[in-house]
Image 1 (tube, rainbow, N blue to C red):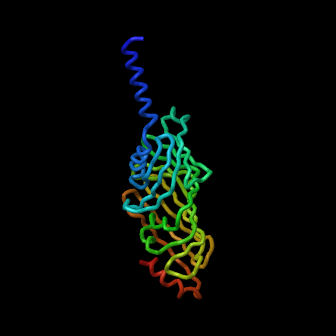
Image 2 (image 1 turned 135 degrees about the horizontal axis):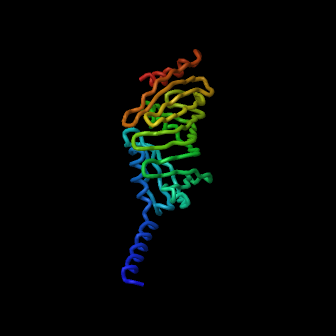
Image 3 (image 1 turned 180 degrees about the horizontal axis):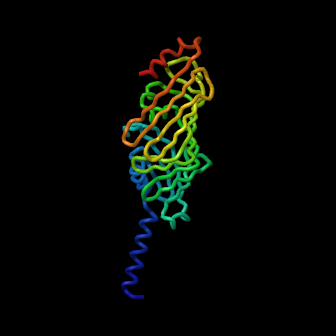
Length: 235
């Protein structure tokens, strides 16, 4: 074997070693770019191909958010298609969902994610001060994140909703549907059940704060108890 062939094989082996041991922290840079800073990976350990960390979902100002424990495993069969596909689990869940990363986008599909009620304040900043409580489930049918845009749809259900501004609990169960067309994400709110009837619509476009307009209806006998909360909604 010639000297140059040996050098070539050595360089190839070295490059393969670098790729195989690429640190998990590289994922954070790709997430930040693809989500315009809305998604970040912190406390990452392991490699690009298998590891754990904390996934952070941040607000429009990128200075606060919520975090979930995350574990991932690479699926090499998709590499020939020019994509990085991972099986992802949150908070030690047994059910995994796929996350696909390419040069221009990040795609999440078939995901069910439990969230604290405080996560609503990330999408609608004025809700952050309401001390919201209850159980929330985000179902992502398919969402594609590109720099400054989101495409796809998801549904957020809020069960046993409550607030620090009223003793009435629960206030009700609610559903928020999200539809992204690339230019903007549109949101539609409806009430599933409960004394506080909420409905509304809103939109969010990349680089801008979300805009949401809604209506609230309350039975007359509970109006006094809910008045402080309604005043906060109106602010």
